[in-house]
Length: 353
Image (cartoon, rainbow, N blue to C red; front, top):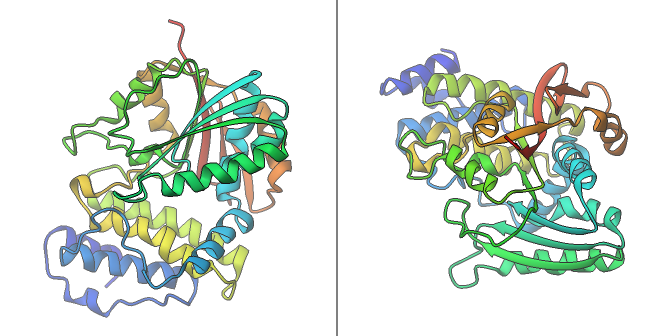
C-alpha cells in the first residue's frame, strides 16, 4: 500500500495497521529518508502524538552537530543564502545613511553579517525579534546575537545599535519606530492564517506592519502551501516540496557529508512532523506560496518592489549553478531547482493610495 493511500486512511480516522511496517531508511536514498520521516509523522497523527510546538526533532543531536548542520544548510546549499542575498540586496538599495531595521526572526543574526560591511560609515539600528530563550532569561540568545553583530559592525566601521525583543510575533508589543526597513526571512509563516485557529489573523498582522509605515518590507518564504486545512492536499504538497529539498541535499552533499542527516531530521523533519501531525494552534508551519503572499500584501496596503534587476548580482554573489537557477515571478526573485520553484524573495512598499 502506497504512502498516500495510508495518509488517506489516517485522515479518515482508520487504524491503518499497514503503516507500522513502513520504515524507509534514514541513511538511504533521498526518497527512503523522506519516507521514514513521513511514515513517522503519519503514525504520530494516527496515534494523536501531536507536535505541540513544532519541535519534535531528534533530541539526540548535540550543539556541535546542530552547528555543523546549520553550516551545511547555509554554506553547501543555496536555500538560505539565496534568501539572505536577495533580501539584503533589496534592503541595501532602499537604505539611507541612517538605517533602522526591524527583523522578524533574527535568530543568530547570520543574515546581517553579509550586509554590515556594505553599510560601512553609516549608523545602523537593528531591532531583533525572536522567541524568548526561557522564562528565566528570555533575552539570553538575543543578547549573544547582539554581541556577535556588534563585533562585526565594529570591523565594518558601522555605528551599531542593538535592540532585542524576546516575543512571539503574535504578542509583539507596538514598536515605536518611524519608516523602518522590515525584514522577515522564513518567519511570518508562523503567524496563524486565521480560520478560527487563534485570535490572530495573518492579514491583520500584515496590516499592523503596514501601520509602521515601513520604507520597505522584504519577505522570504518557501514555495509551498502548507496552510491549507485539507490534510491530503497538505500531505501531497509537503511530499513534493520536501522531496525537492531532500533530492537537492542528496545531489549537493552525498550520503556521507556530516550534517546532512541533522538537516533532514532536525530542521526539515521538525517541519514535516508539525505539518502532518499537528492541528489547530499547534500547527505552526503554515507556509504559503508567493502568489498567496502577494494577495495578502496587496490587501494589507502594499505595492510590490521590482527586484528583477537584482537577479544577476544575487546569482553571482552566491554562485548558483545548474540545476539551480533564479527566475522572476512578478517583481520577486525565485530560487528554482530543475525548473521547479523552491523559495521566493519579494519586497514591498506601502501604497500611496
